[in-house]
Length: 363
Image 1: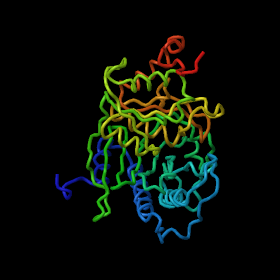
Image 2 (image 1 turned 45 degrees about the vertical axis):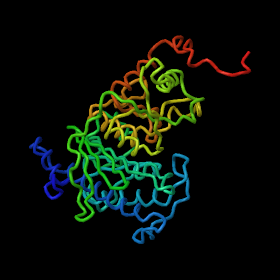
Image 3 (image 1 turned 135 degrees about the vertical axis):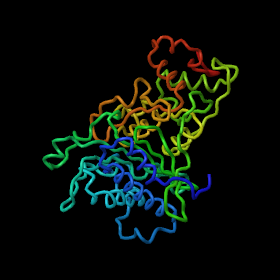
Image 4 (image 1 turned 120 degrees about the vertical axis):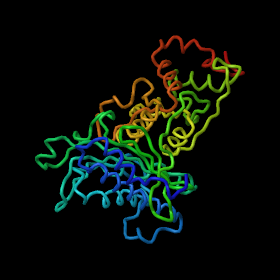
């Protein structure tokens, strides 16, 4: 289809709104604000080491965020874009971010709205220096009605909603092209930024995740910390045609979840960042509210499956704003296999010869 005939993000959202005649249009407007923030971030990311002159007034990075991770300059810049572009419009009651310890209150004199915005402003920012694709992830929730009615300040508990309650979710990918991938609860659509017009154009109207795959993504350097079900699954994949799966698998690892999720949405696969024993204080590496839940909603809306490894991730009741969790998502049949391995008796895994220690010096 010629680029000029493709629908814009605005046109797509209008079509979606027509399915709900009673809708006010506030959700559409909020999503468009988010897309503008993502365009601004894409512009800054594109400057790379040259630096974006329009953001030199913003405080530099180097500080430690609530996650215990060093903030990059673009982490701070991206967080600021999300705040400044969405806070004024009257659609939000508040927001929360990976880069902020506490919920962000909409400041006076701005009007407050009925939605909550939760986001990771720049996922994969550690890859900026090596020019690997990075992105932004966002989730939209409804604010508690009493907070909307009273106008009270939001507290952490207001954001602790299961992923199944999300109104919309998506991400922007800043790669060779900038893409905006979105679900409003009726499938998944992908939009590509037209640099000539500055508009997101619909290029992937009905993204579907294949049910089967021959690719998996996992950080194999953590293999000594994996639980037996994960070891079993990976070893079976690595055994290839001569193993119990009877076919060869390819392994991928980008270390940028937006890029990993995008690859899976485009061609299938499984991503695993499972719970492990590396740090007993952390039941997982990825954040539930602004990483696992929005990506999980996208994957499930595209026909895939998103899980903790043991249960659907969208059913998990959050316990804290920056809660970490194990996360497995992708092609439905493979994720269900991993869940099945977690639910089978441990003795079966323990007796699997694939997990016997191999050494020339074994007793």
